[in-house]
Image 1 (cartoon, helix red, strand yellow):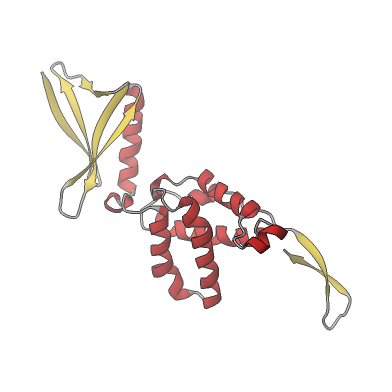
Image 2: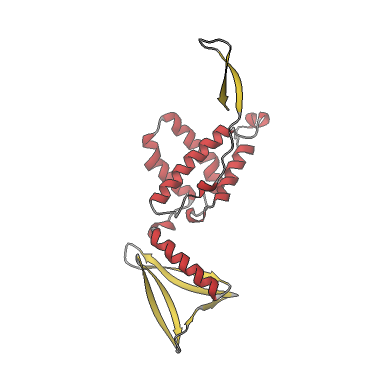
Length: 216
């Protein structure tokens, strides 16, 4: 005989456990592993949002379940599954960014979004985005990021300064997702933007012939 119990964990989160007649918790076999369900929260209509954790062993599933419940308390589970990276970056740009930046900056941001973020990461679930995904995007832009064929022949990749601008914009975008409880942390924090290269140029100003360092 089996008995079902629901344990409330705070923040609208609960886990459903099944106990046998002698009081030992059991997990559901699922393929070659085991599965445990839990209620991550409730939607705007009050219906429970059910999710599952999977693993090869019961110990692994219990550990994942504990971690998932703790994360659910800190996230807005009603909205986390709503956004792909592409949908979130467009939402952030229109609501949080565009009204507060210059027209020239808007053009740069649209280029970052349309040429790099959406093509490489747009379809990925926002909650599944990793620092490695973002780093690959930066590396691709640095090595093969130019769009125009004429420019590609001379230099296929974008400058380090350009990629650092892409990183700064995307970091702000993801930081907003953290503040709105769509992400637990900002995955771009772990990324390594390219270093700027210093180049000497002649400064033609009041002190003619003076050398200064500029960042390329």
